[in-house]
Image (cartoon, rainbow, N blue to C red; front, side, top):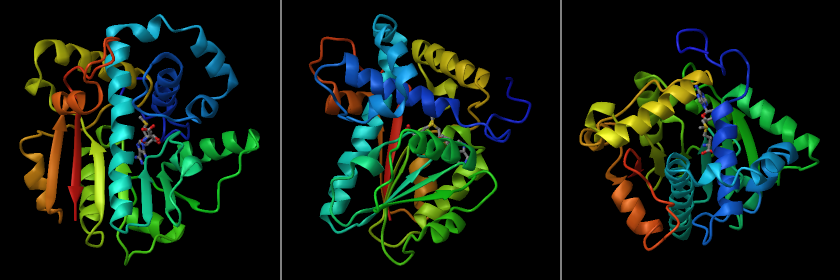
Amino acid sequence: MASDGPGRLESGEPSATAMGVAVRRAAHQLFDDPKVFDDPLATRIIGEAALERLKGEGERHRRPFNLALRAHVVARSRYAEDRLGQAYARGVRQYLVLGAGLDTFGWRNPLPDLRVFEIDHPSTQAWKLRRLQAAGVDPPASLAFAPVDFQTQTLAEGLAAAGVDALRPAFVSWLGVSMYLAEDAALRTLGELGALPAGSETVFDFAVPPRTLAPLARMAREALAARVAAAGEPFLSSFDPEALPARLVARGFTDVEILDGAALNRAYFDGRRDGLRIAGASRIARARV
Ligand SMILES: C[S@@+](CC[C@H](N)C(=O)[O-])C[C@H]1O[C@@H](n2cnc3c(N)ncnc32)[C@H](O)[C@@H]1O
């Protein structure tokens, strides 16, 4: 589907990119050793048919484009859960998973008293809940759900409905979502996250303008953009990493850090000989209120 018609989610269909990245996390469990992101549910949540297909696709998942994309997908989840652990250690007890897709943390949550809230587009969330129900997997009592369309609704409406305590800090992950929103919707959501109580922290990844990328990274980015547009979920926004910190500070955040591919490679992929490495276009931001 081209990017000029109603997108996939607006047509009531679940996110195909959510399934796409979930398959990459599952591939990581099957094909990579050592693992950067250990997720025992990653292979189950994609369903038996997709898992069987994946098992026969090892060769394809060792191609450079797939290695680089998988590295980004597992690094952002690992980084978010590392930062969540630090937020928990300083007393944060609410975790908001925005644009959750097939993220499994809510089912793996090992942290006593941590409440997890999955906020996602209504189409994707209903699909995830149907899948889990069909598989006979009940959500734990610590997990709640709120359907929110970030393009048309405020986050606050969804958080209140799900029972988030607006007076207490929260840790927030927003992975693989901002680039699918128009810039004003992405900034509006960041404004709401910057207004959360002191001690809150948000981790999110974002696309950078293609003109800022080196030629090879730009080609990889264009290939990915074409792929997601063909799936009906075009990239709609990008942020200049140089300018983003000031834009976050203007929305209430105080302590901001942007990690590029080199920093993430140093942190998570150093010394590997299997080609699992971030290629160039990746950026992850963390911002504290
Ligand atoms: C690439 S998936 C990422 C899923 C998950 N965060 C992960 O890392 O596996 C994109 C997610 O963004 C969500 N999304 C896209 N546009 C949205 C919107 N307008 N409102 C709410 N969620 C949206 C999709 O439903 C989907 O879950």
